[in-house]
Length: 119
Length: 112
Image (spheres, rainbow over the protein chains, first blue to last red):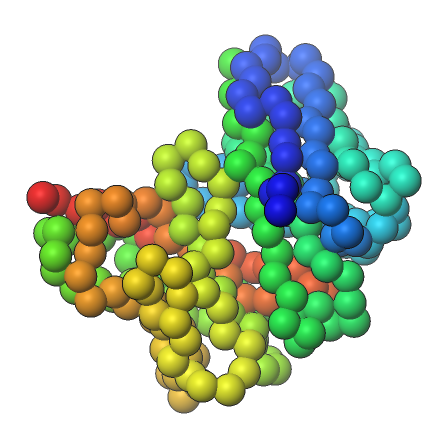
């Protein structure tokens, strides 16, 4: 079974430039997550989709970050304009849908991440 | 609010020694608990999870964890560490909104 695919793996940009990350979840997974992991910290949820609807984007800096999930499959996370503090790993993850997903025994699977350095 | 605390930022052990990584959680309801491992330059890989039932859960790569409700803990253990276990380990709690809340991680270094 193919895992969660992300691209690009690595990106270096200057501050105030824009960048976009792409994610393809595991086939059949209705829920998709974007997490931000700053060096030395645990991952923090930015946005959670269920199919193509947003479930939680409370920690997404909406003045510069945007995300979409067209047709309920692939997703794109965009940063514009980037700041130095946006340097981090952006992890995409997916899981099967379900009411109280964890209570159903489901698990969240992560991609390898997109590493962003803003200089 | 839900939260996870990993008190040890960095642990160093000798190869072949036993290992215990600590995790404490704060959650009002029955917790769903996870341990993930992240090797350098890689994403997160699930080691094991606790949903209900037996409080001692077995995972991949010889790891196990024990859920102790009275102590709000979910410590990860391995009886004999291998050099390939050097990585960052994250404990996480599954919130009712179907998202994971992570601790800050413990970096494991293994000496030969």
